[in-house]
Image (cartoon, rainbow, N blue to C red; front, side, top):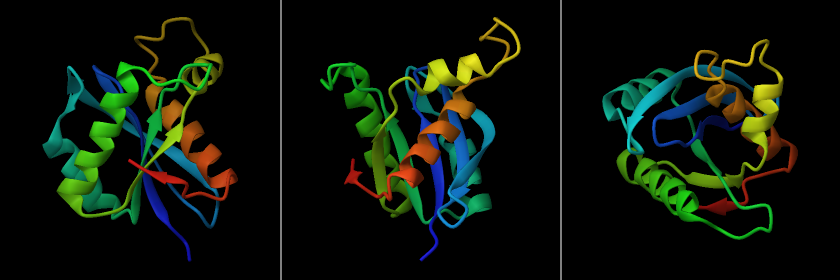
Length: 139
């Protein structure tokens, strides 16, 4: 069965977004969603869900390099649970370590504030999840 997925690179100011499907195993970046202290613009997010009609949600989990969790992991899990609660679709989390660094390396300039990388990071998270044969774990 082919799954369509909206993937999020959770952040406190911006949330990167990517959309993809398991048949192709890739994703494409979408417009980032603004957030205030980790709270997204739910109206904007609802519009994305209505437009793309995903089967599942995927949120990057920013684990420490030693596999331990941190405060941002708790916030990312909470965001993933809220997606499930609001839209009634399965919501998963996936290790996102180094996805932002990899996305930054693909940008042509050093101005990361101007050149959005969060949605590119979401693409990398999504492709990693597809490559693993996911889904793995829910929020």
